Image (cartoon, rainbow, N blue to C red; front, side, top):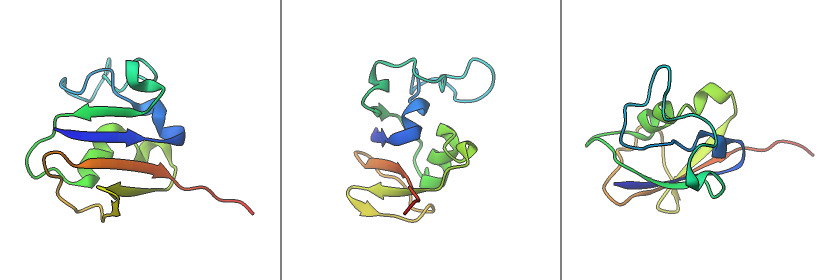
Length: 98
């Protein structure tokens, strides 16, 4: 199991369930239907060998069209990093402005 924290615009992607299949009509990725929708923090089962890239795809982060950065256990990691049991993953949308 891993812990995922979504921030900013990505909080809307908190899954309703983290154990059901995550694609197609009626997906548990329905926006704002989980008790943790306000905090953006939830525990999630993952498959052995799952990469950050696969996690991001499963959650629908890239579909938002917002650039982001990933932290795993408080360190920035590349998208090919393989997740491990008890990892804490933080997905942060990047901001621009001046």
